[in-house]
Image (tube, rainbow, N blue to C red):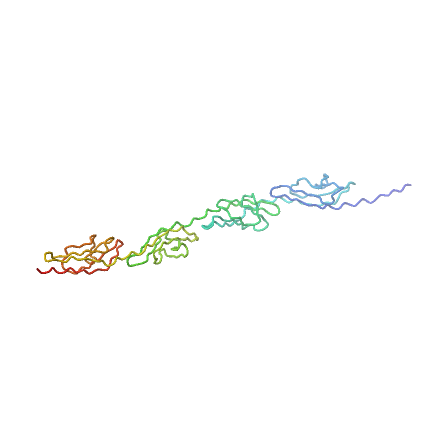
Amino acid sequence: FTEAVINDPPPLLPAPTTTIVHPTCTVTTGTITVTNPAVGVTYSFNNGVTFQTGATSIQLIPGYYNVIIKDAAGCLSDTAFEQILPQPDSLPPPAVKITQPVCTSPTGTITVTSPATGYVYSFDNGVTFQAGATSAALLPGTYNVMVKSIPGNCLSYVTEAEILASPGGPAAPAVSVTQPTCATATGVITVTSPVSGVTYSFNNGATFQASATSAALLPNTYQVVVKDAGGCVSQPTAVTINAQPQTPSAPATTVVQPTCTVATGTITVTAPVSGVTYSFDNGASFGASATSASLPSATYQVIVKSAAGCTSVATSTLINAQPTT
C-alpha cells in the first residue's frame, strides 16, 4: 500500500494592526489603513466579503468594521475590530472680552476667554489663525472671531465683536475772566462749560482740581484744559490775565485867583493831560475838561481818573478870597 501524510492545517494569520483617520468637521468619512503585514496579502474591510490589494480602505462612513487579511495560500487572519467615529460637530462660538479704544489710543483688542486651551484663534473670519487668544491692536470695526481645534481642525461658529471709535476728549473749555483791578493785582479764571463730570487745570494739565475757578493768578497767559472721568483731556483754551491797571499820580494844578474885579478863580490840571477825566469836587463828579472855571473861594480836592477807573490821590488846591478893593 501507499502511505499518505495529511499535514496539520496552517495556523491562522494574526489579526492585522491598523491606523485610523476619523471624520473631521469638514470631512464626513474616515479611513482604515493596515500597517502590518504589508506585503504578500490582500485586505478586507468588510469581514472578508471582498478583498483588495491596497492596504487602505475607501472612505468609510462612521461605524464598526471587521478587518481581515488573506495570504497567497488563501489563509485568513483573525479579525481586527475597528470603529470609525461619528463626524464631530462644529464648535460653539467663542466667548470674548473687548478692550475698547480710549482717547489716548485709537485701537482696541479682542481676547477669547472660552475656549482657552487646545485651540488656535482667528480674528478675521478664519483667514488667519494665531496661537495667542488676544488679537493685535485693532482699528474700529466689526470682527468675526473663530477658534479651531488642535488636532481635528474643527472650526467654531462666528462671534461678532465690535471695536468702537476712540472717544474724543471733552470740548475746549469756555471761560470767564475777572481781570486785575486798581486795587487787586491778580485775576481769576472760571470755566463756564463744561461744568460737570470733569476736573479743571489752569496750567495746561500739569495739575487738576475739582473747582472750576482758579486761584488768584498773576498777569500771564494760561492754558486751561478739562479732563473727563475716562482720563481724556480737552484741547486748551488760552486765557490772558492782563497787567494791573496803573493808578494815575496826583494831579499838578495851576490856579487863577480872584481879582478885585472877578470874585471867582479857576483851577487847571496841567498833568496828567491825556487818558484821564477830571474832578474838582473830590471825586463826586468827573468831566473831560482839565479846567474848572468860576470857583468861589474854597479849598478844592482835585482828582483824576484813568480809563480803567483808577483814581489818583487828591491834590488840595486853594481859591483865595477876592481881594478887597
